[in-house]
Image 1 (cartoon, rainbow, N blue to C red):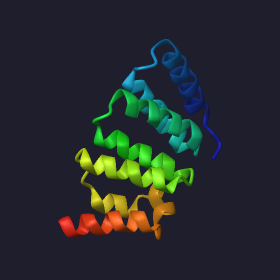
Image 2: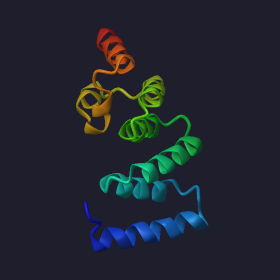
Image 3: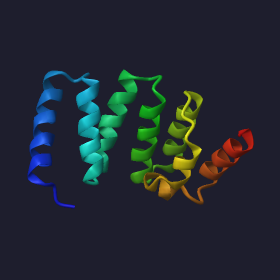
Image 4: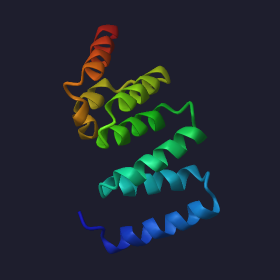
Amino acid sequence: MDIDAQDAFDINFFEGVIKRNPKDVDVLELLGGLYSKYGMARQSLRIDRRLARILPSDARVRYNLACSLSLLGRKRDAVDSLSKALDLGYDDLGWMMQDPDLSQLKGYRHFEDLLTSLKNAC
């Protein structure tokens, strides 16, 4: 997908802001979202890892990290991050089962085991 002019401007702008203030959570989330929107999985992973260091107890951040890992084919790491997200309170099982970012995990034994344990807990 080609980046439209406004999003290209925003990416460049937000990257500049992050250089000056590397812990600006709001800007990191915006930048990560733009990277994700345009399939820039490696850049998105970099942002998600940074957010996980800044906000280690944030379930949504851990879930997003799992998505980035999954998109890059890092299944075991993705499941580990999902498990951490669940431990931290992430509870949207329905979305997790249909999230296209996690589609590479379907059929992966550790992911299926995690889903089964969640279904049984409900």
